[in-house]
Every structure is written in structure tokens, then in C-alpha cells.
Length: 202
Image (cartoon, rainbow, N blue to C red):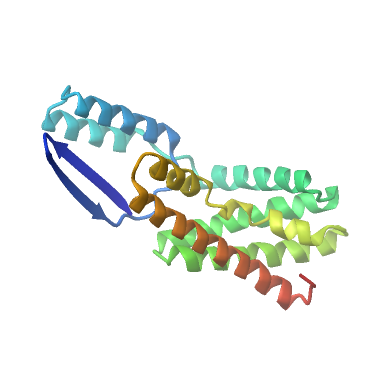
């Protein structure tokens, strides 16, 4: 969801629209903040703004999907070790979370509901990780399963929710916070379903 507020003197115009999967692109975010700042100072005309936004869209490319999946796998495996996973569980966590990220992107491209997608990815990643960890002889399978779904933790959305609330936009912030809670609920449900299917005690 994209929310834009235009303010001129005493008047404000709010517009909200849906958008597709955009991921997290910190470089683009910084560039857009700079554009907004320059626009507020009236340092850009409308044609200049349009040309600049088109140039940003063309030049600010996201990382390749395989590199993102690789990075997600490394991050989840590292968090798994911090959470107490043994070394035999590291590779299963790495593989399961990398596959989970790939599945997540495939579902996003097909415009599957983001919460349903989170549940499916959580189930698939944790189930695959449990099987692989058991095969590898890991003694920390429940921790491995949890670490394999850390890619779904909505950290950016939670940060934005808190930021909006603290900046005096409680309605937008509360809406973001609710989406974070629902996302966590679907994540938990996915892992729970995988553990139930495997007959594991929770």
C-alpha cells in the first residue's frame, strides 16, 4: 500500500493506492527521500520531478534473485547459530531459508496474498529444514526450523509502523502494526503445521 500526502499552504490531499511486490531497496529509499526533500523546497519543477523519478526507476536496479536467496540463507544460518543451533543444522537452515526466499518471490510475482504466502513459505521452509536437519543428525531440529523462517520477520514494516506512530501518523502506523501482527500469526501457523505434520511436540 502506498500513501501520499500533498500539502500546499492550508490544504492537504491524501491519496492511497495498491502496489505490487517491491521488496526492500535502501538505495532507492535514500534517493526518494532526497527527491521529496528537494520537492518540498520547490527546487524541482513537475517535469524535472517526473524525469528524475523515471531515471531512478531505470538506474536503481534490485539485486539478482539468486544473490538475495544466498544472502537470506547465510543470514538465517548465522541467526540459527546465535539461537543455539548445532553445526549439523547450519547447512539445512541455509538451504531451507534460501529455498523459502525463492518460493516467497515466486508467490509475490503471482500476486498471492502476502499473508497466505507467509504461511506457505513458513510451512515449506520449516518442513524441509526439519527433514534435512534430521537427515544430517542435528540435535536442535526445533531451533533449526525456527531459524529457517526468520526471513519472514517483518522488521522493516515494524520499524515503519513505530516511525509513523512517533511522527504523528497513528492511523497509518496502526495499520502497519496490524499487518505485522497478522504476518507473525501466519508465520507461526506455518511452523506449527509443519511440526504437527512431523509429530513434534511444540
